Every structure is written in C-alpha cells, then in structure tokens.
Amino acid sequence: MNPLDDEALHALKTAFCYMPKANDVNEFDFPGRVEQILSDIDTVREVLLINDVDPDEVADEIHPDQANNSSY
Image 1 (cartoon, helix red, strand yellow):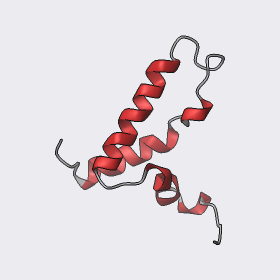
Image 2 (cartoon, rainbow, N blue to C red):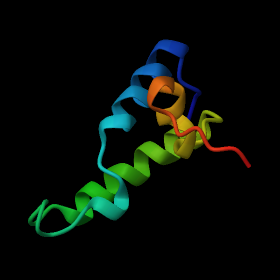
Image 3 (cartoon, rainbow, N blue to C red):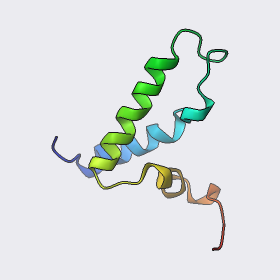
Image 4 (cartoon, rainbow, N blue to C red):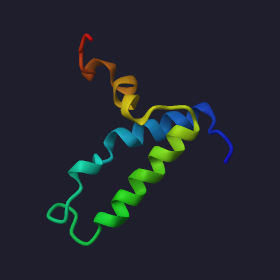
C-alpha cells in the first residue's frame, strides 16, 4: 500500500476521531453490526499505522484544544 498524501491522511485522521472506540462497540448500540464495525475500526487503525501515525494520538493532534493535559 502506498502512503497517503497529506490531504487524504488528514481526512482519515479527522474521520477516525468520530469513529466509535472499539471498547464502546456493543450489541445494544450497534445491533447486528458489531463485527463489521470492529473490522472497520481495525482497518482504519492499520492504514494510520502504515502511514506512521499513532491512532491513539490522532484525537489530540486533530483537536488539541480537547487534548488531555497529563504530565508524566
């Protein structure tokens, strides 16, 4: 797979911010679609990783004003 251009990567990062988190996907909220949604989340995470983007840091990058201000 070829790396995404900057515009496409930014669009994917933004969309990923609005996807449900895997631990929030359940049969009550997404009846009959749990496996498909989890698969879609995994696919997007994989493409982000291929493009050297940490999926767990995307939300803080896209929405820095909402980022956790933790100090380790």
